[in-house]
Amino acid sequence: MSVVIALDLGTTGNRAIAFDKTGKPLASAYYEFKQHFPKPAWVEHDPKEIFKTTMNALNDIIDQIGVDCVSAIGITNQRETAVLWDKHTGEPVYNAIVWQCRRTTDRCNQLSDSKDMIKEKTGLFLDPYFSATKIEWIINNVEGVKSEIEKGNILFGTIDTWILWKLTDGKKHCTDPSNASRTMLYNIHNQDYDDDLLKLFSIPKNILPVIKDSIDDFGTLQSSYFGKEIPINAMIGDQQSALFCQCGQDKGALKNTYGTGLFLMSYTGDIIAKTNRLIQTVAWKINGKISYALEGSVFVGGSAIQWLRDELGIINEAKETESLALSLESNDDVYLVPAFAGLGAPYWDPTARGVLIGITRGTTKAHIVRATLESLAYQTQEIIKDIQVNNPDLNFKSLRVDGGASLNNFLMQFQADISSISVERPIIVETTAYGAAGLAGIKAGLWTEDEFRKTVVINKNFLPSMDENTRDLVISKWKKAVNRSLNWV
Image (cartoon, rainbow, N blue to C red; front, top):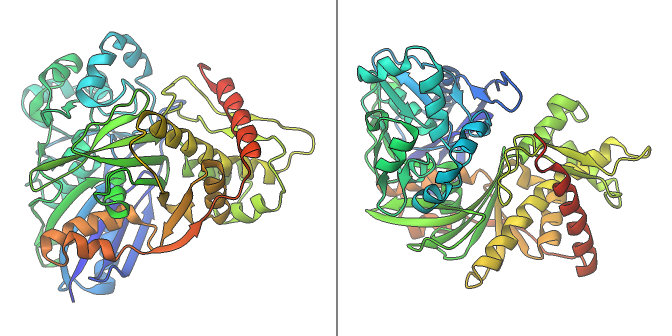
């Protein structure tokens, strides 16, 4: 039996899943890690804890299935999060600065004259979301880092690169184009780091990882861990991984991942599609051929449900939200705009902050829960609408969904209603992991891409049932609520 292990390195925890040749998950393990909030809107992770939880999950998988049947490993990861470390000791110079962190908002404002150049070269907006200003902040604010860089002792990586470097005992310092394209240092046209951008952010090229294809030889998990070297065959950003799994190379196909954030993507092939309010990004690079996608990135999705649980304490488990939302006939005009880390697509306002509006004396926790779930659908709908308006040649027939919150039937039905499009949920909702497994399995010879695609099966289809007048009314109220959240800080 041949098995592929996917390492899914997320924002709130790390997961390992073993898949057999039919796509069946044979074993799964997940470990959360601590979120650090040293100042308002600052978010950090401990890189060593990220590696520890990765190894804990991997250990659990190997204990369950054994090492001899493992053919390959594929890595997928939270993107944009920045880690710098000493290449001799392996010690991080500072905590990982997470993609959600807004500490470099002022710096982005200072660079506003360069925003058009950045968008043209990278497909990205000048925003604290991306890696470049995070790297710059660490270099300028952590004592001794500049001098150690001058000595050639420091390396940078997003989480894929950091974990790869650790798994290979420092032998491989690599990334792939899907992750490199999120650093705000990578030119999506010539497919390499851009000298103008490196100069703008004063980031030396020698700290950056080598860029390889998304399917490639990324070295091996060293035998010192499990007594056998295991090839690492694929690396890809988590949302691109889900896109590969859900849509493959179907031009115009739409997927949305309901994870910590919300990430809606549409595959555009070798075309860099036109857009003013969305991200143009690399989807993947396979056999030397680059593919692109449009992406709408929403910073707060499933993490708003986590907020209900951990900060407000009005639910004990995420699955409670479905029954609470269904206990109401409507939202009674209660809306939540979860701009806890500013607003991403399509607004790109790092100064926005969360708004809960429409509260009356009769408002209950069920209203707040329902408003939170509905906010995920509204944010998704705004991105779908933007893609439709700017790319009328992309004819969307359905929205393919994945991620933990996609298991919520209330949310999926509301998404279908508010977007007036069928919503398709696969049997395997951990598609970020399965996409990386698919890529790794292709190189390992477990399946061809066509064979892999046949293992992705739709489990449930949600059809729209809301009338147009009701849809227009609730969307207009959502937009009023969003306007009240903008330009707060």
